[in-house]
Amino acid sequence: MIIWLDGTHGVGKTSVAEAIKERCPQSESLDSDVYWNDFLEKNCLIGGGCFPQNNKPFIERFKHLIEEKMQSGCAFLIVQMALTEKECKERLFDCLKEAYENTFHIILTAEIETLISRIKSDSDRDQQFALSRLKWNTKFLGQHYSDAARIVTDNKSISDIVDEIFANCNLKTDF
View 1: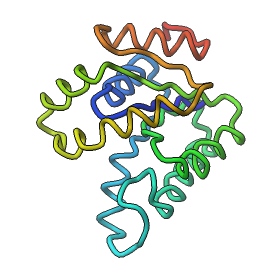
View 2: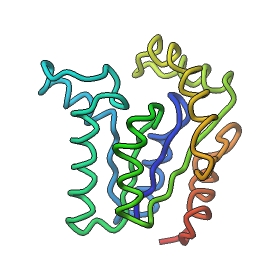
View 3: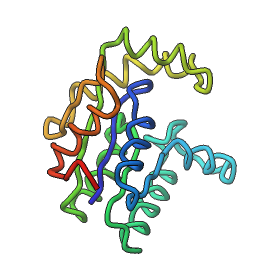
């Protein structure tokens, strides 16, 4: 099973993934941001887009990482990546969804004001970059993925959000 956590900056993908992992210790997690930073360090001369979502070599590498996890017997994989570019959706997500029928696409959402507040309060984030991409990402996600489950994160605890994800994926809430 793959649970794909999608959403723009500040929506809570990382916090939610950590909470799922706590509740379901047998799960594994892949955060595209971590692999993107590693990819940039090792491949600074490889061409492609300037974001993980539109960089073809990165998309192929990240897809390979997911396939490796699934082929090695991982029963429950949490992927954190905003699918805010058409090419990423087609080359990565659509291929994986076809290969692994238990792939659940969860888009976490929140009001723009909530997202701005969260981004501005996160000192570990490149706030200027996150704010500059916020409207584009929110618009893209709002116009695509009609079959994805959407969970509003405003005024909800992480635990409540995880409960909603488990309900959408027909998972037990206690392990």
